[in-house]
Structures are given as structure tokens and as C-alpha cells.
Length: 308
Ligand code: ATP
Ligand code: MG
Image 1 (tube, rainbow, N blue to C red):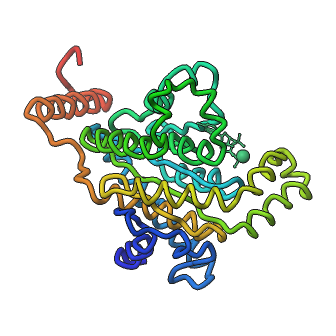
Image 2: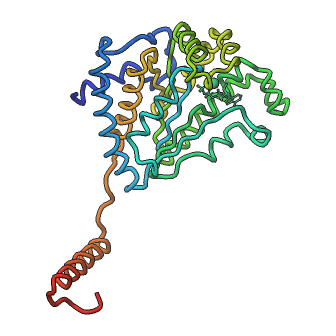
Image 3: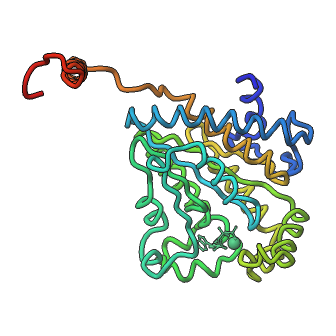
């Protein structure tokens, strides 16, 4: 598939300026130009994953940029599957995935970014966050009682905690961007009906029983509040250096294609290149070449220099 078509695939869902964003403008059933053609999309996904492999090798060799991919979604939206597909395109040595669950007592004893800062990728690597500090303006916004456990001083809770957090998150992401991080944030957007279908499968299919949690149904009952929280978060934190991609996710095959292609696009936007050859490295390579040919000559019974 041409690069142009692939770019325009992500563009409608890429939010670089959140101020006018409306969640209802993204249809979870959307399949872009694929009009439901799963086979064509799967083929395109393979293409994106191949490109990703080449780009990651340069990222790793260049050792200059860090890549942070954040995944947020309602339960059963397919975060794990999307992450798994991106991972098939990268060398596991250059990639780390961290899942953020309910914070531990130790984590609650720190500021809300602390646990994620510890898991930021090194330069040259890709870090994937399965949930993230965005939970602090999503689940915590829907369940403000969680704030009590965070032991914030009164002066922090007198003003709108969530408005403060948007500002702090933006400042944090700007800081990371200035320090060489490429950031992409994915919201896998499913409809409530699709979630019901998937949660029912978890109950009915013995292979999926382990994934079911009654808590997911309690959260589903708060659906409109979650959607409002997502919309607000995206409106306030989509920026040119840390955009959101609101991925229509009712069709898993389309969601995975959008995610993989968005990662490829992000890596193609930066100046990835293998490190240039310094004179020292050039000499080292030349010395290696001579040494190897001498060994080959000797092994064939020829006369090469000694002690090599
Ligand atoms: P799955 O899609 O398979 O259910 P999951 O990411 O939902 O995976 P779970 O162990 O089911 O994983 O849930 C993690 C839970 O932790 C979520 O309900 C999430 O809202 C919650 N959580 C994550 N971060 C925070 C936070 N900072 N404060 C409160 N709850 C959080
Ligand atoms: Mg869950």
C-alpha cells in the first residue's frame, strides 16, 4: 500500500490540538478506506510491521530518541492485542511494556507521575504503557473517592485537581519531548454495545473466563462518565508534541492497523539514521577486515601474518 494512503489512514484520528475535540465525531465502527475489508487491512498491517522493524533498528543503533507509546481504553477494548501486534514488529531487546494497575501503598506515597517516570524507556528504546498516569484523570475522575487515598494536602484539593493534572501532564510531556522523547497516546475507542458483546464472550467462552471481572460491569455502568472523562482528557492534553490517536476499535483488525501505522508515521517524522562513521570507527572496521582476511588466508593454508 502506498505511503500516502497509509498516512491518510491515521490522519483523521490524530489529534494534535485538542481544543475542539469531540468524542462523538469518532465512530468506533469506522474502518477508514477499508470499508470492512479485513483481508486488505491485515495485509497492510503486515506492511506497517515490516517498516517498523527497520525503523526500530535505526532507533536502537542511533541511541538518541526514546519512544513512549501510551495505551488507554475501557475494559476489553483490545489494548493487549494491539500492543502484542506492535511488539511483533520490534526486537524485544529494544522494547519494554509496563502495565499500570491500581497503585500500591508505596506508589500512593509518591506524586502521581512517580511510578511512570521510573518506567520511561531509555534512549534508543520503545516504552509501552498499558494504562498510565492518564488513569489519574480518568478512573480517578469517575471515582473521586480514590483521591482520598492519595493523601494530598488541602491546598492541592481546594482548586480543581483534574484541571491541575492536565497542566502538569502537559508540562511533563513537553519536558520529555524537549529531552528527545517521541510520544503517542492511543485511546482505543469501542462502543458500549461492543464492550457488552466482548464481556459476554468472557463469561461464555471457557478460554476467556480468566479475563472476566465483575468490576468491569460496575465500571460499564458509569459509561457516560468515562466517556466524558476521556473527552476532557483528550481536549486538554492533545498537543503537537504528544498527540492522541483516537482509534476506532470495534473492529480489532482496523484498530491494530491504525496503531501500527501511527507508530511508523511517528518514527518516520524524526531523523532516524544509523550513526555516522567516525574516523576511529572507520579505522576499527578496516583493522577488522584485514584481520579476518588474514585468518581466512591462513585457514586455507596460505601464509598470513603471525599471531592474528
Ligand atoms: P484488561 O483489559 O485485560 O481488563 P486492564 O488493563 O483493565 O486489563 P486490570 O487488572 O483489569 O487490567 O485493571 C487495572 C485497573 O487498575 C483498571 O481498572 C484501572 O482503572 C485501574 N488503575 C490503573 N491506574 C490507576 C490509578 N492511578 N488509580 C486508580 N486505579 C487505577
Ligand atoms: Mg480490566
